[in-house]
Image 1: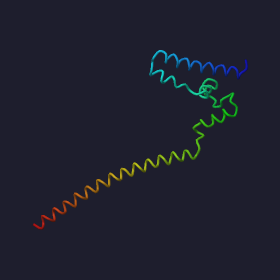
Image 2 (image 1 turned 90 degrees about the vertical axis):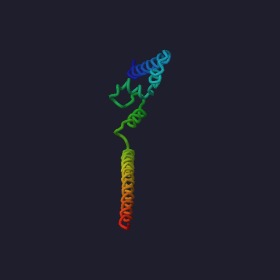
Image 3 (image 1 turned 180 degrees about the vertical axis):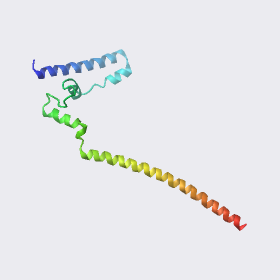
Image 4 (image 1 turned 30 degrees about the horizontal axis):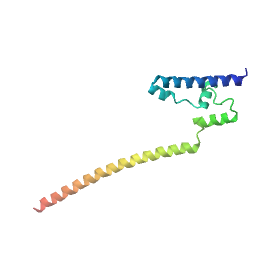
Length: 129
């Protein structure tokens, strides 16, 4: 048996196990557990878990397609633009929070100003009397 055939056998065995567990939980009526377990991972995830043991991020047997997938899944390979977008979104959120805080401060100052104006008018009336 060749290396590729052995790996393919392990992959098929694991997929079958996952599917059987999901079906058995569904048949037992354990609704909560079956909802969680019915979320069977996709083929690439199972292949990477079983065959490569998550040590290597290349999907052997898929050729250059597997290498493309693994490089896209690697978070360190995020594009600079997506990192910049995240930073911009975080900065925008920070400025929105600061703007809200400043609005609240302005409202408090308006209330204090109106109180001071009222007191000043009241003192002016008392002086006239």
